[in-house]
Image (cartoon, rainbow, N blue to C red):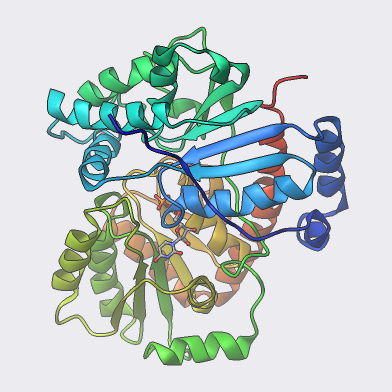
Length: 417
Ligand code: UDP
């Protein structure tokens, strides 16, 4: 078997001091004090892809910030192949409770790729964080090789998804790999399947957003308006936006159905669905086409793909209401992104969305397309309430879901020297 190497993701620099205004002096000081005690510690993050989806989004901010704090942090990604991508997509769906085809051949595809990475593994670390199912098997194959040096690090599995339904045969396969880790991290306690070894230390903390990236930084009203016009959107008319991969769990079809109902009551309303095709997501195209078919004949629906971060930022800011109508959701960074921009969010009452939106305070939690439509219409009709919810959401994000809070959480995982 040919060894495979994890490849290093190159990312720019960040300076903690730049965050003073967004996060506040106290939060800055807390993370600085913690990092000072750990100066020189070495952390490796392993994930499957350098762009597309929430994991990539949060690591591209988290890694440079921790570096600025004097921690040696690396982010490396697996060398993927198509078959592995298909298998791990099925894995992701299966873990989230969908009935998927799962057989021994698929398990072998998974094992072979990680065994090859174990053969090519190099480097020494104090903390290694493997994100999501894709790299979870690496530790077992390193253990199998038997030289033991990799065990000098503390190995933590960071699960970004909700596995509470038990995950069926996929989880039966994955669990022994996860059991080997020294600890696991989950976004919410209720995501943890009951079968996970009770002896393994478990940490619960949600992801976060970076207020200074092109995705979240302030933009001038002029730029926002031009961004709308570039895409044929009228900035003077009501706008509803959802930003999500085209994926069944994000329910783009449900959003379009909700919009159909919104249009009957607010004929000037416009809908923007922004989706990217993540590298590790073979179903993207299928759902993109399905969304296009569902929207056929419905006026003022804009399906946009692969916009750059500033453009996504601008359209989130242009929205009167942001929707995140997921039917299953690990966290949903898009919710915090919108709340941070002072936009009220109508979100599915699932997973991490319920951590972010307090129902009736920062937006609304909904259980169906019809309810999403009703709440959106309510907010479109009452600009004061929408603005009030938006500013309450911004405060909530500031206190709970900004990058410095998560930096602290990661630093607490580093073993004492
Ligand atoms: N995103 C984007 N462009 C798109 C779709 C998504 O930039 O067309 C970003 C979105 O802004 C968010 C991340 O991708 O930062 C998605 O993270 P989330 O936690 O919402 O969902 P995931 O894709 O991880 O399930």
